[in-house]
Amino acid sequence: MVIVSIPAVRGARRQLVLSSLGVLCAVLIASSAYADTVRVTVDRALIWNKPDGISIVLSQVTKDTVLLVRRRVGDWFEVVLPAGSARDSRDFGYIRASQVLFEPGGVLPETPRGPQSPPAGGASPATPSPPPPSPVPSDTTTRVAPTVPTAQQAGPTTRSSPNAFINIDAAYRQGSTALTQSVPAFSTDYAEEGTTATDYGKGTGFQLDLMGGGRVWRSVGVGVGFSYYQKQTPAQLTASVPHPFYFNQPRQASFTTQNLKREEIGIYFPVLWMPEFGGPVKIMVFGAPAFYRTELQAVSDASLSEAYPFDTVAITGVTTTTKNGTSFGYNVGVDVAFMIGRTIGLGGAVHYGQAAISFKNDGNVTTNGDAGGLQFLFGLRSKF
Image: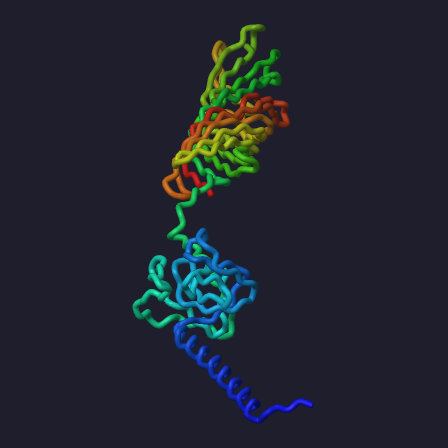
């Protein structure tokens, strides 16, 4: 049997009430001391003696620990140390800002310039009155991440070389060889057979040239090109006309025709070498198989004038017909461009193309020669 005196029970109750009041006062004092703090949730992190990451570790907190943030110091937050930490005569430490999650409804303390060292004795340094802080939306939890430089703060980027191009050129062309034809003639008028020969020239003049393409691997590219040439020029006709009375004594005659049309279309598929040079100057070298189509207004017959004693003869006119011929050849060249803008520039080039042309009309009149020739180009350059 245990006998408890009434005065002992009353003393125990008094002791419990006093302890509760002490805890309440401690909480109120702490709340008053840290009235300017913000409650935050942190990831697993270390609390350092200084905001440098290399000084003394005062405490290690686990994920989802709730701390009080006093202010921001650069990329660090000054936080109140949790109970049981190695306080080192102070009640605060530093944690990286990237490891802090603000609780809903929290506000970010003003960030002072540079780290703030506390005075001796553990007292917090006085800070000037900050402007009103920016509230964090109450319906979100925001992670404080390191600042990312803006486009203006970032260093200049290196522009890559253009990968595609379009060239538009006017070209002066010097044909490689003349188009000529030799035609048996006059066999129905004389006992012997004569001939006519016509020289249509080399196809010298101006032409339009277009080319486009792009890189497919490093400095190697592919493309397609198109050239168009048209000109109307006279042709030189010479004839060997049999004598009406004597064998093996042909008479010679010559004639300059009116303007005859010559048209040539070239299509080529270049393989390109496009070295990546810095600066506004761009160089391109290419070689290509090429397809040529030539249309020619050709002489098919000549009209003669002669009189007794028939020692001389004159050509008074010619009959023409249109011939078409196609052939495969090649086209090579080098191009130099000077860019006056990011995508626009001027340039010049030298091309050389050639293909053997041989075609005939219904009367077996054969014309032989070359398409293409040496070309000097100048025009616009677009690179992108």
